[in-house]
Length: 285
Length: 134
Image 1 (cartoon, rainbow over the protein chains, first blue to last red):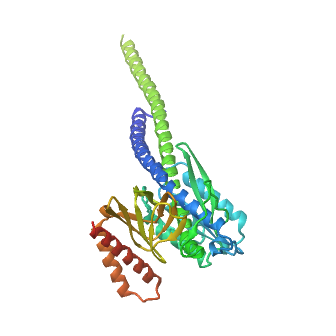
Image 2 (image 1 turned 180 degrees about the vertical axis):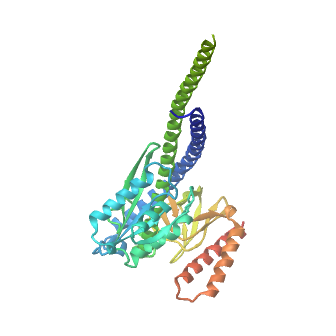
Image 3 (image 1 turned 30 degrees about the vertical axis):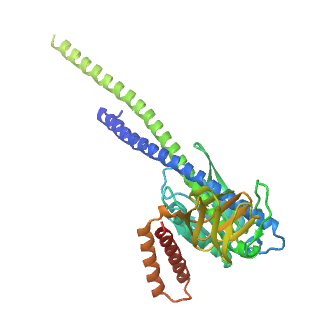
């Protein structure tokens, strides 16, 4: 049986740890709130751009644009959104596992695809396995704004436009609620099924539908990436909050158990001492 | 006087939301003046200032590209970034302008960064112009 001092040490270190996890839980809760708000303020933009894109793509007959057309797939790009740091439960591993499985099912050789990694965890994972990481971005702030991601979003879309990739998929954790996030796969490009729930208006185009699509489609694709990032950030903070809450609860449980063992051991020691004193006194008589 | 609802929306949230009498924007094919009950229209915008006329006053919003969607009762401007004149960070725009100018001098014209620097310069100049008029 462990000595009294050992047990005391375990209690103390577990207490310290629970303080840390508690603090992390609370910072994540604050970030989670902001993250959800950011994701919400993006919704009107996304809805609007979707509506207009749908109106043009479906309304203007005979309008062609490379981004709307499926072509023979020689190389596929996978945009993978993870966090920079761990300690968020299964948040990162869920996304990565899904991507890894998909890749192994769909592709035979490493030349057929490349990864665009958002977040350190994804980058490290794929680099370690010798998988081609075409672009990477780490250190995205917890409250990202569009400028943070603009560079990588436009180069990703650019790589589709110049033929480096013939297909682009995006993988991220879709935020459902504080305790539930779902790994989501979305086909980013080519844009095949743009639909809008709103009633479509028929527009005049100034100067022409082609020139508008030229501006609109890259902007639309970049928005999809940004939207996924916001969604993923909200999920990350929610996942970390839940993970840290569980850690704090477990620590409390452990402290309770250790205290019980400690008190028992203390009681045993006292009983033993008394027995020894009584025994010693009896021997003298 | 008849008014039309104007929304300027960016990925980081709405920037401007108000009823105005007239919207003047610079499309890639030229300046557009939008009055209430305009026919539905979509047009891409230049990096420029959008002018919003209201009660004889003029509000300015600096937009970095994007496009304009018009419906009879509503105008929506979707841009990747947009600022009201009063919200522009002049110091930052000045720094961006200097940086862009420096890059333009260093690089060859066919380089991709040259184009990027050119756009950055346009955006900075646009922001400065809008904030000056305030």
